[in-house]
Image 1 (cartoon, rainbow, N blue to C red):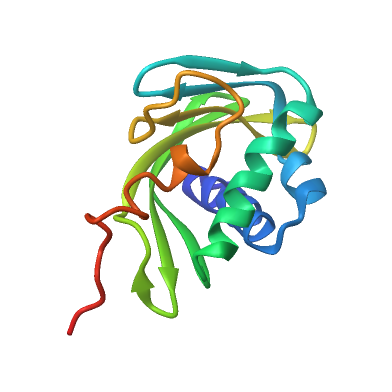
Image 2 (image 1 turned 180 degrees about the horizontal axis):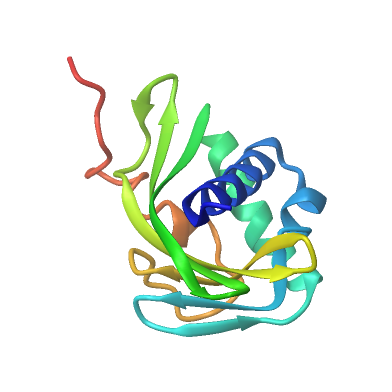
Length: 153
């Protein structure tokens, strides 16, 4: 199967789960241990319970900001090995078509576990966090301040 399609499908499942507040569906897409790179740190998540606070911060943060579309658009993906896909994507966070935050680039690695492709590693260069769990201030630093994107007039 096309690695770009696999990567986009996995992004869609997780994005929809975050927006819907469906932790079980989200957690089912994560291969543990899960390595998260930020601009300033490498963070290792080892248990499903450790995923929960970050999931809640992101999901609730999107809801609090009226987000209607949490879209992650795959730009490239390829097999790094038979059971590993490396890809990158743009993230768009919108409320009724208006940007809530500036689009940003992220990278993810998927690994095949049986018939499933699961997220095993993430690169969030736009995040400055140095500790896990991540919270709303990590995700929405640029969305809540004076530099927030404004809807066209």
